[in-house]
Image 1 (cartoon, rainbow over the protein chains, first blue to last red):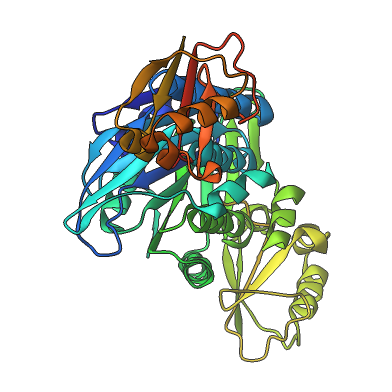
Image 2: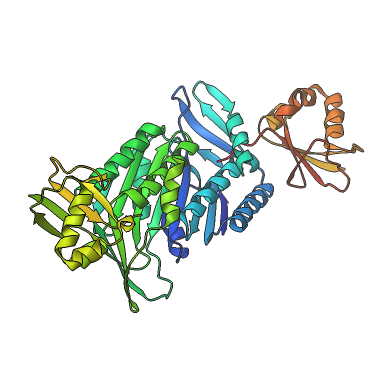
Length: 147
Length: 147
Length: 82
Length: 82
């Protein structure tokens, strides 16, 4: 299990390969990567991600440990950036390794659902047309109900 | 949309990065990679994968096109190897790109479920203790019912 | 004349990957009955229909699918890709 | 004395990321009422409780959670990670 919170960019391909190599014996690897999308106006300059140092590590560790207990996983990984991101930059990724693809998929979705709404990160879009905080979506809160 | 059936190894990390780069605009990338697992006895030497040239391409294209229609996807990818694989070799991967993580996850699971039971591949485990064809699992057939 | 192709343990039990068959069988099931009557190796490969799947011209089909107009019949075990 | 930390637009509206508050508030809700009475910028930041979330000593909590023994209260908008 690895939780990394960093301002530096990361290489999702290299991280995926390293994760798969370390999870020897698992037949199924699922990854999810979130990429900085342009805004509706197409003029996004920077995505600024604020977080709550200390609580972030704790919240992500709790979420990952719950996933490890709830599903039959060989390993799981969470990487989340903070600071200033450019459009197309990977924001975060999760990866899960299991003997069973159903467990790998379910755990990755669980990690994402909790990470979206229960980990202390806030996104601000800085665009030519102005700056605004990204609003939480009801659909993300509702997604937690299924677990 | 890319479907590749090949005997050569592939690099899941490099493929993930290339896929994410070409799917610009998608905020969510899901990948699934299947890795050759050792057998229960721990003496697997080679996993031999047989396929049905011609029908394989067709079946995978059908599955991918159905996924593209059914979910809001920017792109999807299927790579599947055939021939002789060593333990720890990646067998196959799928990747999906979408604005929405729910669509990316659902489509990747759909691709995997159909690929498991509806694409003409057969696996044979060649071990010190003997050779045997991998049996289809009821749970894989049952997984199709949810779609 | 119809091409019949076999995969995995069906191919191994029958001992060849592909053959041309002269048949007037109306359905896949009829063809399987015809071949099974011909030689033991077919009877053994086709003994349990529930462990067989078929494709006609490279599309999955049923045992009662008609053979009229079909050029290639494939008989194989349940698939195990992924 | 309790540390109170703010994030995202709550931080921006209040104008600082962290402060020490002398309070005898029993719950988070009491503390919010107290701060809101103190200055407009608090009242504006805390106007709509449904758009706020709170954590006590870095664990998510409720508005009616007691403050006894707590060193750090965090007030922020719904999280938008991932």
